[in-house]
Length: 453
Image (cartoon, rainbow, N blue to C red):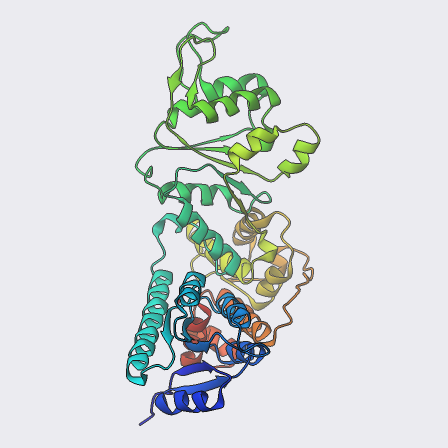
């Protein structure tokens, strides 16, 4: 029978006698000891303890609290989920309250009663476990709003969480990213996760409509407003009333219409072309562009006041070449889709095709990958798609890393696990074989790295 490993408890205390007392009182834990700020941070990096007890008075000035507060801030920056219990001197309520305000879990005055402190430490461990389990369950049950987005890349997953957070807020969102990175999928996901999900999602590409027609497309027109206006027609903004309007390629919006759009964003009313009365509109605006709007502002091609109205929340979407594991993961999904459409069941990606997909820079992003897989699915002779079928020239893409050893190791593990899961199309057994580890070990790694099964 294997006994459970004791939980790590970090004790930060410079008094050897008190340090010994705390270790003796809590011998049921794997007690780690530090007597100054640097050694405490080293223990945090190495062992990542869930609970810490610390004295505010630490060397080099044990009679002051500046070193203790500095350590508290650094520990919580390093491990935001850690529960730090501050031990203070008598009549030190002001510093205790300041520690709580900085993020400490609780405080005790010295001398303390070990039995009461033990209850607090046990409660801190339980709360930490509950929060970790809650985070794990949330990652397993990702909302359907972003179900159309396939990714295992940490940055893209962070963007998904951002989308979910801002979905309920009535703010304008600006999506920045190269063409083909999935801006419209994110915009639709934002709408689907919002209280406006039951209403319409309306998208218009500002670069695809001639300037002389764009105003009437956006704002609508009255009967007789111009030649050919045989009936009153609502525009895209009015059509999206109570829903979401996506203005794609907003960087191509003419200056004359930028002023009119700014007025709408400020007043939330429109006038149709040829109209004389104001129409109140309730709509959520999501904009997208591949252009650098700040550069356009400097060139006088985009209004600065409009930019700040549109960029209440600004989200930059990374290109496909920067998303670890995503090219192979998406390629598998596209092969399944297009093979079903072409009645070519059993079609799979060969090893050389996967290598080419992973190494290619994909300047056209997801759209280019989708087109390549579709063409290969149609043109391939056998059931294995080869690098020649994919038809891309592989090019290496560089990558910079951190210098903190623990962070480097975790980043390397994450990159390897994500890449293996991408190449195996999410099959944990095959991914474990690629990594040379057992399936339980891979599950443990995925749990620790916050990756979904």
